[in-house]
Each structure stands twice: as structure tokens, then as C-alpha cells.
Image 1: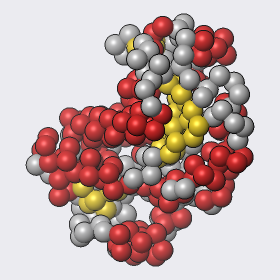
Image 2: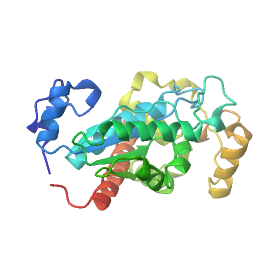
Image 3: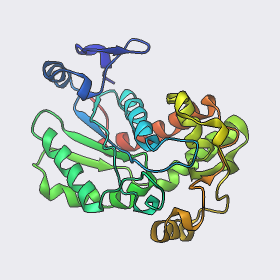
Image 4: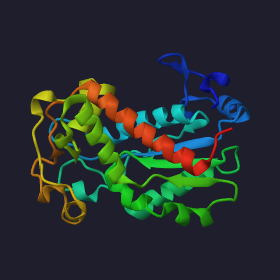
Length: 271
């Protein structure tokens, strides 16, 4: 595995780990990184949408920012592309402030991101989303993008939303015995993640329980077709109570491991 500090980075962040986000590097620094074998680009997708009364609309994008760096660190040969901060959020438009892209718009953005790095030293792009509403788009996106991109660039997308929810539930149960508080939106997992990465953004006194029924495929389809407000008046799916930074870090690590493992399995051994 390549060490991130083998290339000259502009800014250094916690624990003396080199900056991996290309928007914070200079062009010569990125060229140096490519020269020593940093050939994977991680493309994080987020959203700008309601997350109840206790969390800001930036949750999914802030989450994607942090996850992308954790994944890149695990892969060892990766740099991070800027997070796409608006996603497919039409099912949240019943709440003020939510922004949403059409699926074809978000796919076009992904295509343009990939085309921008193709032929410039990168050999692969790993696309993931910290917003569950983007997962329908990610299913099958690899085949749709391939004909539009130059040969030599492999695109791999992570599209297993159930695995992410399971990872959150397992982490919440292991850390705090609160696996049943995970519902997938503004719940104990997402709230704890925000406590870990942006603690000042969490309005603890406004945290409230939302829909706590089973979020199976039928219910998720209802969310997508009828909107979140059809099953949760406050926009929360799950229960944020029991939130803690420790639980948030456990959720982040669990999903970062999942994403990195998916990338390794699809890319083969790193060199």
C-alpha cells in the first residue's frame, strides 16, 4: 500500500497525514501524487436536504467529505474529488430548504467528473454516496458511464444501501446497544456522525424521535414515491436519542471499511 506522505502535499492534517483532497492541493502536487502511484479518484456524492429539526441540511455532504478521506486513506493509492453537494432529494422537497437534482443531472455530473480525470494519470474512479436517495442512480451507473468515457478508466460504484444501514445498526448495537434506533435518516447514526465531525452543528435540544417502524423495501419505496413527510411529520426516520461522538466514529469506520473493501475487491491488488 502506498503511503500518502510519499508525495509533496500542500496542507497537512491530523496525525501528519498528507492532504488527499485535490481541491486543497496544487496542480504540481497532484502531478507528484500521480507520479508515485496515486491512481484512484474517490468521488463522494452528498445532498442538501432536511434532517429534522436538530441537524443542518449539509449532513450528507459533510458526511461524504469525511468518509471519502477515510476511504482514500484505507485504499492507499487514492485522492479525493470534491463532493457533489446536491443530490436526488425529491422525496424531501416537502420540507423547506431541500434542494434536489434530477437523476439525469446527477449522472451527467458524475460523467463529467470522470471525464475530467480520464487520460490524466488516474486509472479508476470509486463512486459512493452518503445519501441513500442517490443509491437508485448508482445501481447500473458503471455500464451507463463506460461508453461515454475514454478507455483506460475503470469506474466502480458502491450501490448496496442495505449494507450501509446494517453497518450502522451493528456499530450502534456494539457501541451503545442502540441498533434499533437506526432508521436511516437523522437517526442515532447520522446524528452521532455529525457529533463526531461537526459537533457545533447539532441542536441537541431539538432532537426528536421520528418514524420507528421497519424500513423494508416496501416502506422505502413509499418514501421515494410519496415523500418522507408521508410517514414522518418531523422528517426523521429512526431515533437520534443516545447519540455520541464515539458511536459516530464507529459508524464512519464501519462504512469506510465497507467501501474500501468494495474498491479493493473490484480493482484487484493495489500496487
